[in-house]
Image (cartoon, rainbow, N blue to C red; front, side, top):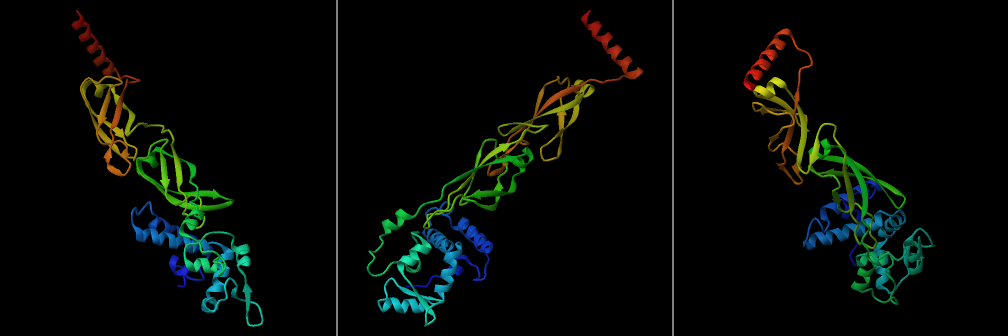
Length: 322
């Protein structure tokens, strides 16, 4: 029976802290998760091995027993070959430096969690010669995938436009942990973002559930979003609206665009700036449009010269009416 070095499986030292082990597990689980590697049998096997290692090293009692038993693996193997059955030696007691742990004692410590490998069965509830062999179907029936978890997430329109990395605090089963989540650019209001493997942990290697984020994009004081298009009001002086010219249009990412204003542009007229709206999720170069609604601004005061010009204009309009 092959010895399983769970520390090597997770790529950590034997002196690793609980935090080191958890971080290593999360990184490897994301990399080898079946959803990320569909149809890849090697990745699936690696994922199972990672979960098996974390099933032991992620539990204080199991890790302590594993560290003790691992040092005496050869003695256990020899005892098994000699027919020792379900009772085997553990360092720390007895006149010979060992004490005997029965299968019932092992179950009282580790419960009925169903492991993956023969090595795991032997160390954590493997049973003696009288125990019936565990079939693959029975092992699969004990494995249970962790439940999915949902959580609300509020974003500003700027964050939805650019994409953002958020550190979330997740509370599950009385435990609190943090996870860094990348929200893609272009995400919409009321959409759901799936974070693979960040839900509840499964049992017996069933795999972790997923985390689903319900996104809420907060209203913006200047821009209104409609699908992938953005709408903004732009102040245009009266003279520019009448004679034509240029107006400055702000963008969500803080830039300013120059908009051509046609002659005799009307108040409330909508002008389009193509390709300056929200990006499509996963396609940052595929952008919606930006629509500028013209807000013609009348002068609040007039100089004598300006007043004379407007009076002349009025006389011209009166002459046309005649």
